[in-house]
Amino acid sequence: MGTEHPPDLTLYAIPLFFALMVVELVVLRRRRRRIDRRDFWASLGMGLGSLLTINLVMGVVGWWFANLLWPHRVVDLGSGVVGWVVAIVGWDVIYYWDHRISHEMRFFWASHVNHHSSLEFNLSTALRQPWTAFQTAFFVGFLALIGVSPALIVMSGAINLIYQYWIHTEVVDRIGPFEAVLNSASHHRVHHGSNPQYLDKNYGGIFIVWDRLFGTYEPEVEPVRYGLTKNIDSYNLFTIAFHEWRALGRDIRATPRWRDRARRLYKGPGWEPQAASELQPVS
Image 1 (cartoon, rainbow, N blue to C red):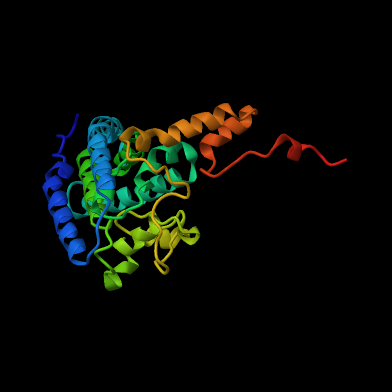
Image 2 (cartoon, rainbow, N blue to C red; image 1 turned 30 degrees about the horizontal axis):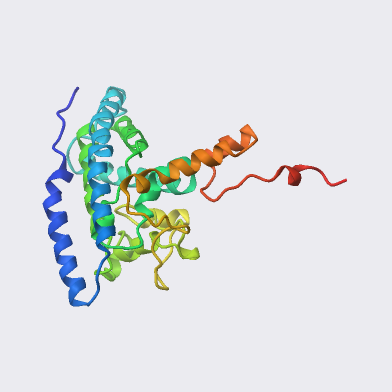
């Protein structure tokens, strides 16, 4: 299809993921802190399920879509420095907006919510990935139109995912002046917070500059409370993966007006329609 499919870098990174988890567990034990084993295994189970679903889609459908657009590219940026820079930066800015709509539109939140469902925050949480977030494969495919080869699109996506692994920890505090540009554990702890001032903040993948530019940046100040505003209190993988889809279906069926049913899909997770009595003019 024009270019050879590159190796899946995330598969090569799996041994590193587990090695770092062991290191983190040792450090936490020395600090006399423990993690919830049920939560730990639930996160690993979600990661395995995501590997068999989302990674498969990203590897097959995303590859197909990027190659479909590749013949219509404006220019070929090649596989040198320019090609790599545009691929990594372009992937990250698309990731920012994809991540943001996954919080701000309930249809996409239904897939992404499971990543935030843990009350813990450690490297296993990074593996608690969605099973149904298929849109990313299509969004990033458009990079092919500006000259990023499908191979670089796939590898840049893996690099983005691998980078974000280490920021899911409380073991790392701050990274000094690099915090101005790069996403960090501190920035991402905020993103996983259910504190009111931390909700829907710090969407960046590798870079935090998009949040600073588009008004979604929030520094870590007060201690972070992890989890959802309404926690699910379950370690069942299917409950974690699909609870919001079921809730969305119930809310749509219980909503009388078809216009409001549609709004359920693209409004925020907390949106509720006005009652019919509130819509009637006051006499």
